[in-house]
Image 1: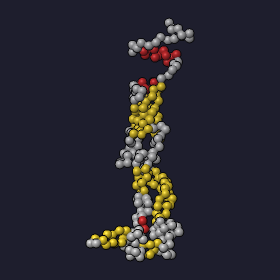
Image 2: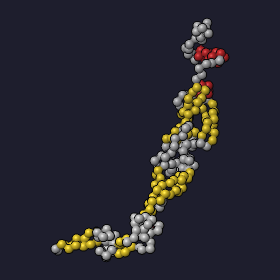
Image 3: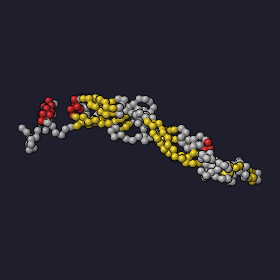
Image 4: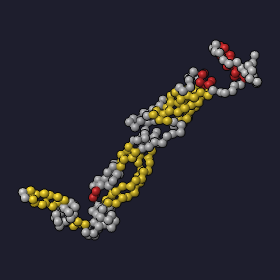
Length: 238
């Protein structure tokens, strides 16, 4: 999904204007009436000597209108909570914590006003074979000691199918081998990161007689001091 991009369905609850009353909170048949106390201004003015003080109308609570009969759908609130499902496009290269904005899909506006935006936070699940660092991917490959010493080409799994990985002569355990351009895409460009494989060298616990003899010859050539061969009863062979 991160490499190619995808589309996911998200569900959420949000408030919208009540459809029957269009957000007024009043029963559609009766509507709203102008407040008789403030004359629709939403404020009342009181004179105190040379000064006049304005405050919210106590009858309509500053709305300028009075609901005689509340809407049966929203009970006078003018808003209803609805459960919605929409599909959101997830671009290639996203990472955990990225927030995607979907314009106009958030809370509905008041009394016909424009709606807000929906923000979707992305959570990318870990992969069983690879770990991520930026746009680079890191995996592991196991090599025989002969391939590590002599070099080879081995087949590895990538998100783009099987690829050949070149193993140079003398590759060391823990060394990283790279396949350029097979990592993850960037959100800001079309380029992709690299894919790294950490080498694990498989050292056999038991050797065939021919293998052991050849390795001992190599040890003599390299002037390496190694243990003498051990017989069936734990005694060194002569």
